[in-house]
Amino acid sequence: MAKLSDLAYMIRSRKVGQHGFEVDIIFKDSASYKMVVDSQILTKEVIARLYNTPESHVLAVESFDAGKTIHFVILRPGGRASGDPGETDVSGGLQYFPVTQLEVPV
Image (cartoon, rainbow, N blue to C red; front, side, top):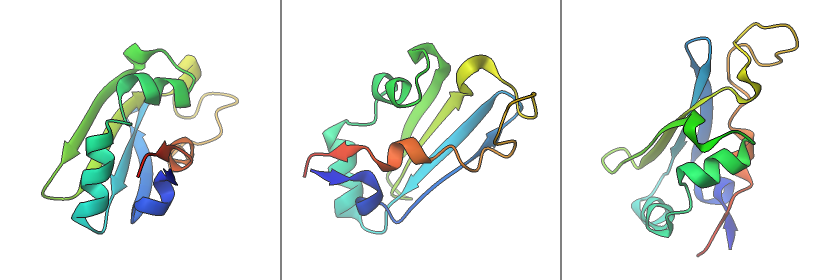
């Protein structure tokens, strides 16, 4: 097993409108990208569990072979909007962390 953060070149997130954010997992080499895609470890179910949100809040999980990138879009957990009282990440730039610790079979 290897952590996703050890296999990826970059993992980043940013907000999508007021109620969502997106995460991009970018790989430097095709072998690591293909290993993660083939493992099918990044499903709506797994992402929902990582972010403690209903599976219906995971709007998209896509892989882009040409860019060696896996991308997903999710509604903010807890139903908060960007800038709501108590919301701590207005830009969505800190939302990538839960996927960094995901264990991938190698």
